[in-house]
Length: 412
Image (cartoon, rainbow, N blue to C red):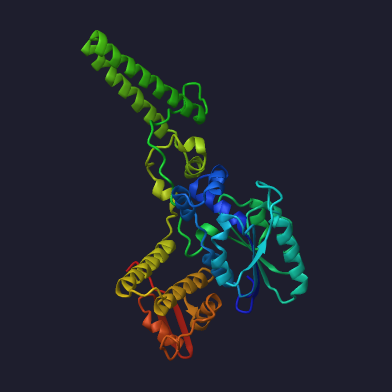
């Protein structure tokens, strides 16, 4: 792998791409296309605001990950910053010293041309800045494949970042290294919106029809049963239908419904099929409110992510305790430094399977992520003293002149 200690990194973000892709990842495929008109007409509507907040992009997680490859020489984000979905990120990006490149779409629903502008700037930078070692492309379109290939031919290490399910396989293959935005430290797994509770779909029929046909058939049967039930109620009220016949029809209806449920449970869909189904509008309407195994499909069973989640929860608890004890709106430097240490250790250990890291490398990563960090400003004589004060987060091992540190196992 390319040297990350003295690396010099250029970051290019197709911001429209990452925002729209993450929106669809959270709310289902093509959700932004369906909601675009509503967002344009009234972006401050409560339901619109709620959906946008649920799909908010963690800008800091992307920039922090890029900084793990070396010093950020330049960072550019390309988008139409007059659009509401992008405008709310401007202050965050400016605070992280990101250059905002304004793009004006030719039409209301046309592509904004970020791929062409981004590629031209990146190639120009390759020849203008000879010391660039890494290029980070935050996008998912296959349009960036020629750019990644050209940058690699020019001797730079190409890192790609994209949203899972919205990134072309060819782009992943064109990069030296690729990271899913979903897996970056600090990014919460998307929470699936519960689908309305409906009758289960019928399984495959004797003719072996497609599952989508089964869903339509299930809807038709449900409607038929509803009509039959209504007729039966009317007949009972007007003509005094035989009570025994009515009681006999009720178990039959329940039997038909349960057979459809068994047919669906027996279809044996894989986790990928479930994930795909949850992202399509027609299928979402037929999904039950809760699906067995949904938690396993939505959140990867990974002990490392569980460990990070425990650390973040602990940090959140500390922040809540601090908020309860302080009425001012200012930031707490101690809490900020603790969060910075957690992210730096997580990013560094992600690149070194041994677990133990040189404390100097960890401090360097923290300074990349926040140049204002200083252990002396926090009242510590050395970085080792700072690490010792965070013994619930980090383990420190000192042998001679070497000082090694790693994330503390939160499972004990």
